[in-house]
Length: 415
Image (cartoon, rainbow, N blue to C red):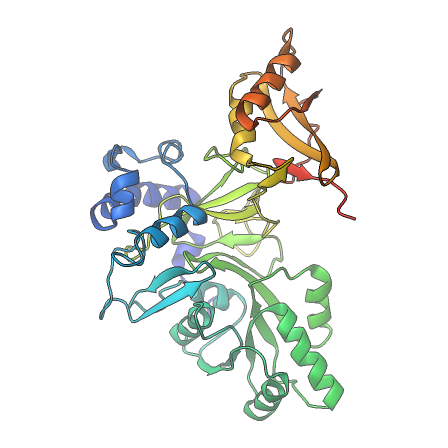
């Protein structure tokens, strides 16, 4: 039995990159021609020129709030806000809604969300019965895992959420080998089974997502005979990355290009630095180009010890949208980035808000490669110009700010 889902996982990294860059111009041209939102945002872009990551990085980042705003503005003309390349009918068997609401199309292809690769890495195989507890209403999570498991030849029990005692009963009688759902709900189910003396020993593997699964919880599952593996995807993009047997970060899916950018900008950060996950998908039905997930992560060096050669990320490390209200004014990460860009000697900036609500102060900590005369004063003036607020400026040595992706740190007391 193969250790890999397909040959794409072990191809030479240079071959993969060349294939991505060869396909990228066509995907951008397709997005411009078939999705009105990209016809507008990419109207001045020559798709044929986007054949490198540097060229891709020059395109605008589309963030979730922009997608929502476009959808709201076009509710009665185009419910997808101009981002979908398919319409209701045979090419879109389902449509889902995420909080907002943001509406997402599901195309007609098998394993449309590309989650099967992650399930395979978690040990799911043809003939397994999968107890799927992801939601089956409104959001696509249930369908994501169901269609992926079916693509692998598994049978799926559509358990959905809640009703813990009935979940335990169904698992005891059907004897599934695999679970898909949130890690917290799996813990609740296993605890209820132990409390009531129900044998769930058939369950040996799980693909978990939707929330963090720290090592302590992973070890808790292992002590009860269940190997749990994380997957990272979104309702907009499908699979982004998945955990392997190495337990060293998450390997990127073969159907996406991932960039890590400084929050509030579209500027890629150096390898290893924490930033926002920005994804370009090769999905022709929903051709999102440079979609900002709002999630923080970082690139891990090297390749997966399992033999998979795609890039790895550390996993979910928090949220990138750090917009903070200070003295009645909203300050955004993009504003901090704007301030930093005005000074070539500034390599990184972090706004720290301290004090108490309604009596707060802010300090812009700045890593600078050179200390020109009057730099602090000039940066202070730029802060007032951009945010309309006053702040202290503190110059620090390059490399001294934390590598946690935070552009705005809210350290106020909320007592």
